[in-house]
Length: 243
Image (tube, rainbow, N blue to C red; front, side, top):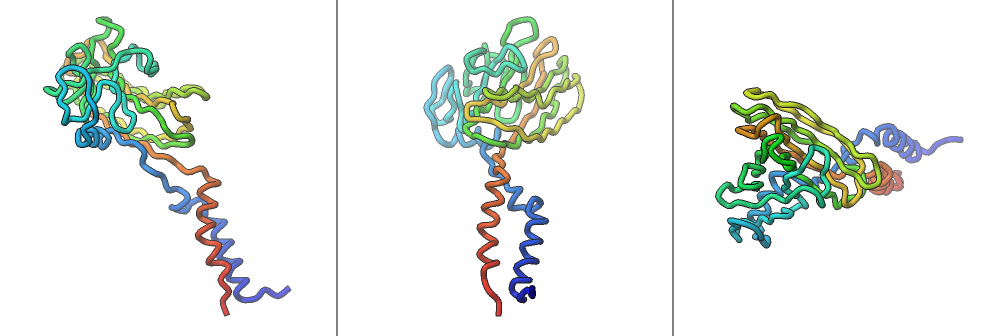
C-alpha cells in the first residue's frame, strides 16, 4: 500500500510525538500551589482577621492558619502533625513572627525550637501545610543552619496521610556552629486534608538554635491527563491535509 505524502508526514510527526511525549516540557509542567515565603507575604498584605496577643490588624496573621493553609505550631514531636494535638503559636507583632509561651518559634524566613528538650512536650517548631489537592505533588526547599552558639537542631520533613502510610522524607541533624545546608526535592501522592510538616526540633536547649527555611509545593498533572492535553493540541495539526 502506497502512503500518500501527507499521510507519511502525519505518520512521522505522530511517531516523533509518541517517542518524545514523556520528556516534553508540556508533560512535565507543574503548578505552584504553595510557597512558605510568598504565602506569608500575601497574608501581611491581605489583612485577614486576627486573634491572639499583640496583634495588629494590618498584618493579616492569625493564630491558627495563614494564607495558603499554613499552620504555625508547637508540637510534641517531629512526626506528629495532627492539628488536634500540640498548640498553635501566637502571632507577636513585636517579633513579626509566631511564638510559643513568649519564646522564638517561626518567622517568615526562620524557624527555631520554642522550648528546650525536656522542659516541655511542645518543643518542636512545626510549619504545617494542609493539602487542598488530590494527586501527585512535588515538594522542594532548603534548610540552612543559622545557629551560633546553641546545641544544634534536628530538621525534618514529614507527610502525614489519611489513606496511605506516613512518610519521613528528610531527617538530619545540624550541629552547633555549623554551616550545614540541606536541599530537598521529592514527589508524593496526597489527598485533601493530608499534612506536610517542616519541623525544627531541639537538641538539648533552644538557645540560638535557628534555621533558615523555605519551601515550594507544586501540583503535578497525572500522566494520562497531560498526554490527552498534549494530544489535544497536536492532533488537529495532523489532520490538516497538505497538497
